[in-house]
Image (cartoon, rainbow, N blue to C red; front, side, top):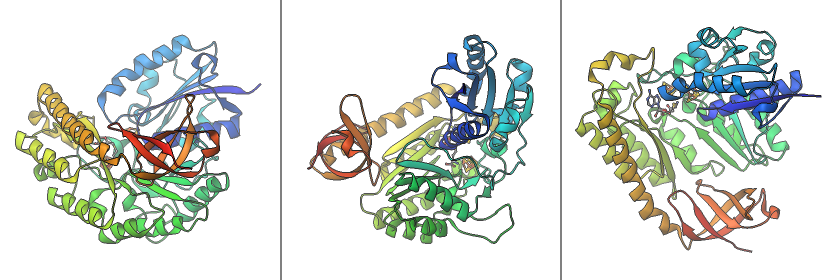
Length: 434
Ligand code: SAH
Ligand code: SF4
Ligand code: F3S
């Protein structure tokens, strides 16, 4: 009988892909199959995130629970960014943990899984040319890493110390991985990296430079691939060449993530983001001018050390001007080993931080309540990707509105026209047009 794997994933989309790789590697080399029931598992893995403090605090109580609930003899592994940053200490604090595998060491899963007490967390490890077993999650969509690590030094961010320096994955490996997924029915790809548009500056085989724009052109030549998405691009590297390719390449989804972090040039400087408020607005305006129906999503951190009321108003000003379609809001969280710890004396009172967060969320709620209903009456083309038990199908438009409609499994994997009849803040509902 095959062994069973339970895997819980926290954090970003790169962690999701890493979990898919872990699962695929363990299936191929060790005969594990996935289970959703922790109690049935022979191996329990938690793929962790370190980006903010709270989930890290919760980690030990969570694995304590795993240890209580697991069946006799089942193993526990801690993987991902918190594994990278705490390493051996995890086993010291929780001796029942069988192995620790860092975010930069995923290719070593098959080596550590059977060695009690093994710890692989070196951030100098280079997985960039490792051919992972093929992973599948969504039938129509595949996620592919285009680089590992991050070379930026945003002062609040722990990621460079958990994922190491940035190395690009060779374009031909990326293309062949997407081709494989397309051969199995995928029509959409999500390209992943901490900083996708600095792609091609360093490869581990020392080949010459490449660019993200060129990579996008290579990928769009794949027959059968209909939609290309990517995250996260860095606003600093959104040069004209990139924006023009984004605008004219029909396969590129017209929804872009532009992580603002702050609208204040002073705070952006303290964060070492490398751009100003004006640069961000200039890039957003250029994109909007070239791309009708563009949707823009963003990440914002409030209450970074030293953020004054005026700085916060600058953030609200950018939110009002750019009209983001989705905002991932965070309250600043001090992280070990980051440069921002030096600004400890300027840390913002937690209550003020919470107040700013609420204000930002409310402002954005009001915007969505005003803007989403304007979609009613329009007919949108939707790639249908799943059928819910209540008989509704759901999928996404090219600019990534999520749309629901009554339908059947015949629509799965097809692009269908849906006339919008109602809207919430986050999704649309309509009727399929025969
Ligand atoms: N490479 C991506 C971000 C990865 S982390 C990028 O640059 O866009 C995802 C988000 O978490 C960041 O965009 C940031 O908004 C948030 N974040 C990172 N460190 C944080 C911290 N110390 N406190 C609060 N939010 C943080
Ligand atoms: Fe962190 Fe900045 Fe790198 Fe994003 S670009 S992972 S925020 S250091
Ligand atoms: Fe992702 Fe969290 Fe690591 S956001 S890169 S899993 S710290």
